Image (cartoon, rainbow over all chains, first blue to last red; front, top):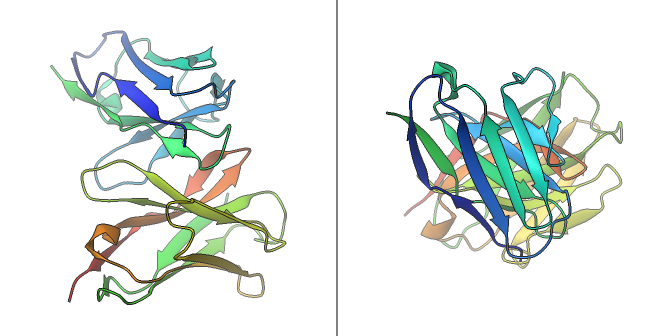
Length: 107
Length: 118
């Protein structure tokens, strides 16, 4: 299985901050990397597909980049609604696997 | 817009079979637009992909669960189902059904908590 490792596990930030979350794969996933946002008690929500594709309806402050084994999710200006847990997920090879999550907390 | 709703028992005894159904609305499960997937999340932990099925009945399973998992589809009811046999406490989790397009999970159900306990 491809192991996905996110860093940091927890991030404390303030409204308006630029936030970057990193996701590293144990082997290349090419560009087959997605990002999800999950709030407590809710299902995950797709933010980014295929490394940098912005899902319809997702604010443009979210962006993704990377290739191979290293990827980043950037929130350009953190908003109150963005405090949540973020997961990366690879779909280059079975089984599809997720990172352990990064919780973005209010500083 | 596709909507998904999980249903099934919230409590399953150890060694028994967990059975869940996902009902699809707002679209036909036979459309061929998606794979239909199951994902689970133990409390306070991360997400684990269980497996998926296509309209044709073709399946892919996570090898870690493959010996215990069966996913099936009922196009007449616009539903797909999950069966997980020989459950233990480690299978206690919120179970989600979701659509999958090119390896990405677009639409999710709200999730259903299944507790394995005697």
